[in-house]
Length: 155
Image (tube, rainbow, N blue to C red; front, top):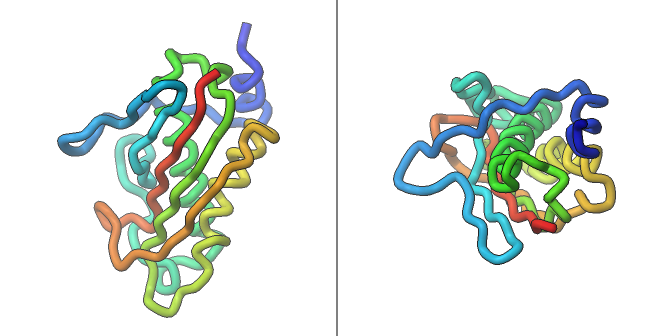
């Protein structure tokens, strides 16, 4: 019988990919006490980076939100792994830290990261409401448009 969060994912038509392996000398998540710290997740889909380029040049806000949503899906995959396969063990999403690869004059980083925040709240409800940072960056790994890290609390 699927859990509450798996049922919500199905309602939204979302299938989570397998959690991506780290691309360097780090782990994809760390569990410390009841907190799960998820390393920055980029816009990988089927193992390939998507949304290559900068907001304010190659992409507008809507494409940036789609990129952020893809990062959130990858965060959920890492959280599922950290929770032993059961996303119902996630009691709360504590914080998201969003990085937007953008031109110097781009100022809508919060609107871009809303793509992730909105998805997290749609899945977890009130337990998905989180603290957040949304900052611009001159470049991100593999040239992707968005990278997001997360902190969650286990039940």
